[in-house]
Amino acid sequence: VLQYKILTHYAYVHAEVENYLPKKYHISREEQCVTQENRLLSNQLESGINRPNVNKTIENDNLNKFQCFQCSYEPKLKNKSKMYEHYVACIKQFQAAAKKKYNSTVCNLCNKDL
View (cartoon, rainbow, N blue to C red):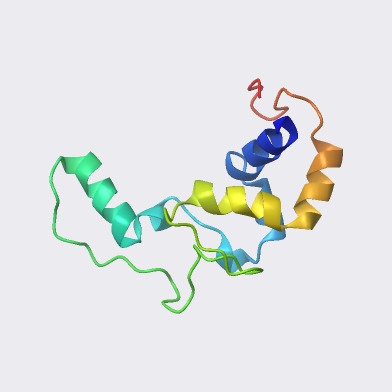
């Protein structure tokens, strides 16, 4: 469990998993608010009320960045954290490389105790 927590930290907080994803599957902060559920939540947090939907779209309308490019997994809550957490389990190359590289319970990039 601790090893998984360490890998998840590096995958999401430091976007290390992006080295193993096709570039078109990288999720930016702006794209997290593209889905209807996330846009609604974002609007509520921003203004306290629901505003009309702003027409924000992903570069390629046919590409769903919240669906795994390897196994087609799609989380119910579509956000970067959930997707990158999934990639920790799904992308075996990331697991193997990260387990060799990150073996301390203190992040060597941000000094956070994991």
